[in-house]
Image (cartoon, rainbow, N blue to C red; front, side, top):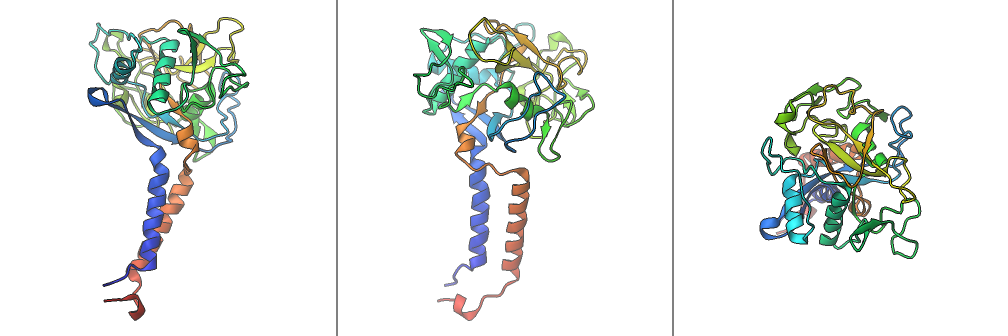
Length: 336
């Protein structure tokens, strides 16, 4: 019987470390039976990155923790299934002018409905709800509530799934972790993306299309950001958690920030670039507005390697494998 050489053990351990570190990303399954659906997440690392001094509002983009963000806008299929299981009562835009498809972005949802969807995701996985509803009415968390965060009374600190803040969304869209710089557009470029009706080609975004066409499916919504997130420019606007004045409180009715743009925007310079932003009444959901989800604790409870770490580990594994393939076993390493 031949023993396993030490170098092969090291290769196996290294590969396992890479695989286990990546378990926090990828697909997360929700629901049950015919109402099962998956959401795919990608890691956003580089905690403590600098803010963007050109983008707006308020020099955004600096985030001092690692997190995950949904690779795609949340599709209709996921909202329909969660609503059926949780009795959420969410009503999406019927898309009668183009015909609704399961993988189209879930539009026509107001901010409060998006928050209820997020709360259901947390409940499904055993986390605290992210947002507080008192007898169906949205309110802030109070100091007596477990998970209260004075810096952001909207979001419970014990929740995992949340709507992205302006900084979380902005970083995922415009920051390049490899060059440590911000780009003007969420396709890793300072040049406007090429308009497309749908596809995954680099440097493209779904805009400058006919209104009657409707948005593209979430997994066919243009090129990726430097972190690998799709559809952050064009297709549909996306809700941010953050108030328009950047202060999450209820001192006065506050519109919520929207980022992105729509499939029928004429120019990428309208709302797609990093300095542009708009807002919307949180109680109103338009056909042009969708959302995506952030995961916090699943990122923080796992080591999310930076891109450079992946490369170092990969090179290490290849080196160990080469040594193992070249090394001959000594008699003491062979047993019968």
